[in-house]
Image 1: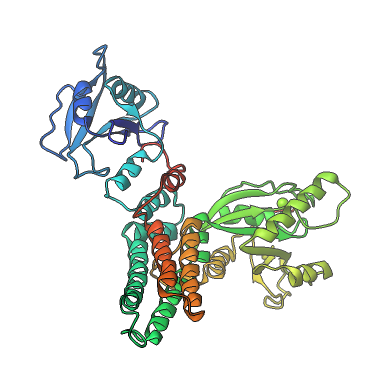
Image 2: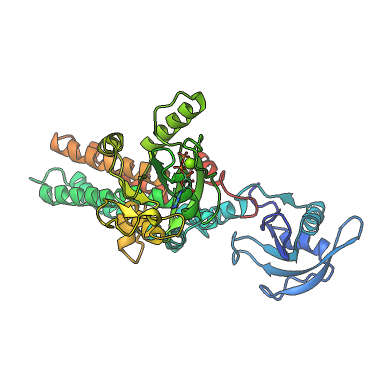
Length: 449
Ligand SMILES: Nc1nc2c(ncn2[C@@H]2O[C@H](COP(=O)(O)OP(=O)(O)OP(=O)(O)O)[C@@H](O)[C@H]2O)c(=O)[nH]1
Ligand SMILES: [Mg+2]
């Protein structure tokens, strides 16, 4: 089924100047020839203009640019045609309809990229990087995705795999010469190589916390007592009036989430109901929700008004909270001349004047992405649970191997753990992927990618 001809609109629907329609598979050129009046395969990769007509009715649908590709030199590794049509809701859909009538099939989400993987044009990590690039909302996400697309992570994992394979080779030597006193390879050498491999895998797993946070966006929860200016700060950080602001304490009842980029890093900002005991059922529920968000937060932006001593429950909150906190002093514009700035602990901000907001953004980035924000360059990062789980499996297998050696188990038995470690590493890159792994990776893709 994999090489039947698929077609899809790769640009989002809606009013736009142009749209891109892709066709791929063996027979893509023939299908395109049925709708493009002046179609020729050659010259490849060269834009040409042609009327687009419906293959059954002959009706003129558009005047489009098209490019041809010949397998294997294309994104999918198959014969391909890309049509640049006029945009909007009607024309691209009609052009796609004409292509379907010409014998193509509507592509499933991510099917083009999936074919690229099947044809060896991309490995699984690169395919995921394509999806990450499409989903990126902050520059740091783009940098990480491009790095992964450039095989940064694939290369690092391939190196780990080679390291375990070398260890396996040393061990095989021992299996082949069991009679020799202590084997031709000193046991200490094998032990040291196993320890090194374990450490190298652990180092990469060590990037997972920030890497996954980078891909998903860090959860930053704005909390504090009612009326301290949480929703105003939320709006100021977003740069839009998203949350309702009033002078009445208890305005925000439900948590609101919105994506924001701070210092180039992605955040999911949450505005919450003010933390206080309340008789009001709805408000009480809101406070409950706030507490739930707080326990999941990567960072809490705790708001207290500038120029006021922290109340007992505020100090208690700061003592109790288990996640990193940035203490923010709100409404700094209300501080009179007599107030000494700096007498307050925490960062002075004013949602009213915008004072301190830029500083808060950088502070958030540094707090949550400490390792990444410090470095200009983003190295290979573990950005998905899928990678982390497989790497942890590889790490466990290496330590099972060490354990088996320590217990004096037969070498051939111990070596099975190294085989398993290699297999786990290969899973990450997608050298041999089972159908269910592929399903999971591609289910979140958009159609046309
Ligand atoms: N002068 C000044 N007033 C502010 C500032 N931020 C908020 N306020 C005012 O403080 C009041 C409460 O603001 P909100 O943003 O609704 O406060 P909140 O913490 O979300 O309140 P609840 O949702 O009720 O818990 C409003 O009257 C705002 O106009 C500020 O930076 N300067
Ligand atoms: Mg509010």
